[in-house]
Image 1 (tube, rainbow, N blue to C red):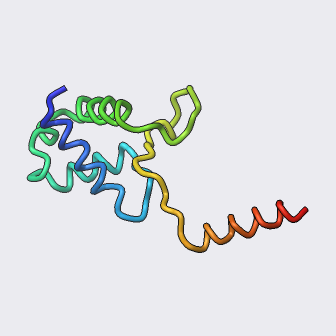
Image 2 (image 1 turned 120 degrees about the vertical axis):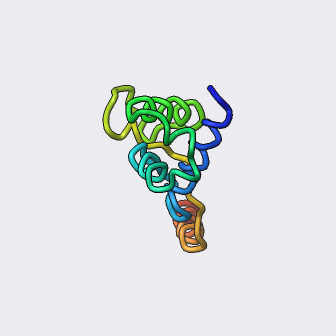
Image 3 (image 1 turned 90 degrees about the vertical axis):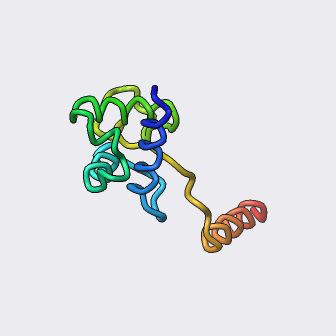
Length: 104
């Protein structure tokens, strides 16, 4: 795969997911590319079918699918691109649950 196209897909996936989300869909990546053709000149030139195939191949090689299902479903076009960071509240909730279990 062309490294420049790969870089465009990776960049588009990070822009499409935003800062607060750990998931990104093929549709949101494609919209990011179509809305910003100057940022993604190589992918903009591709046909819709080729562009979608390129996005899927690159994302499947780099990131796990959102679901573990082996079947091709709409959720298999969604990738987990980063782990959700734990907040102080979720950490304290886990500690509280752990303390309760230990005291039993």
